[in-house]
Length: 410
Image 1 (cartoon, rainbow, N blue to C red):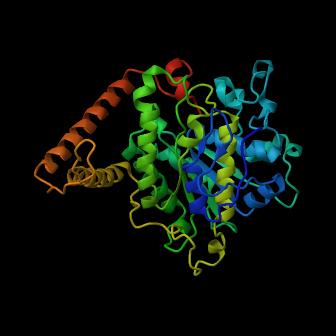
Image 2 (image 1 turned 60 degrees about the vertical axis):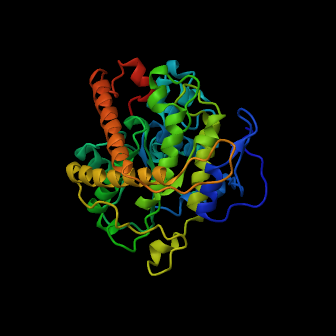
Image 3 (image 1 turned 45 degrees about the horizontal axis):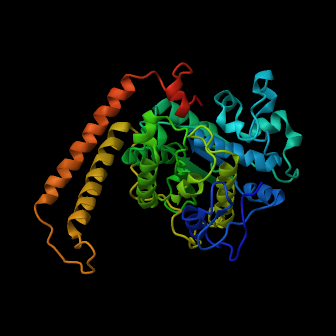
């Protein structure tokens, strides 16, 4: 499988590998992806087993795109790109097409996606190519739409995380966007609600010096099969704007950032939403590079100086677990963001067409009007979203075909 054309130098830090993979590109459709600035290391299976075994578990929270990332890690560990992302012991005759890109393309195949590596150990242990001394642990927990149901959130956290401080660190992977129609601040609220509840239920993550590696991964580009009814809210314009926004705001929540638009826009996306095997394997290998470059010694020695400085629980994460207080905090920060954006817009003066000089201008009273206008647009979008949601069936229902194209049941 022609995924990669190696070059020097290799990326040596988490920041450089995530930036290079976010900003890279292809030389044609499904051509090998070329990172920008430094190269991704492609690990052997033995090395992958070793990297993953440094962690108590890789905990992946999100939607079906994150579930397929989990499946891609399973493919690498099982050395099987054809069926390795599937729980094939669940297959019947109707699952004949659940191989290669069919694993992500066909909706009925999604029911058999590997969600938890323990399921593979329980049902097909010989398919995992790790030695007995290394036993990776990967959990996918479906948390789709903000606001998160409180009981569902607690259940997911309790299933994924030990009640007491584990011997090895966890690594957290977050993915969100599609289920909230790429509404940027709602994804920020999703992060806030999830992180604050983890810190409440697991007090060892409420300590300021704890090693808490977290990575936010954006939705991939929309493919040509994306339904026309979703082009406005989930098309490539929305994806690009969402990625730019989260690139700025994920670090505010102490999350590292990995954007997937560039790596996917010229790649196979069979159903318009879910990436094919090639793209998911690239996502998985990027994740493995990030995990390998993390300074996990901080888990064992909290007094050690962090290499990248984003491993402690940030002051800006709301500590309240209830949605109403999180919503209030979100609104306050959203208003600050709107004011900042309006200030930036008004502070810039357009140049004459073809001219080189920039003329400085004062920020005038239109700032307040611009902010109000932006807020009105947001309110209108929210109203339209509520109307759209109320007019469709539950996204988790198997009966709603249009919704199922994007929001299949987890």
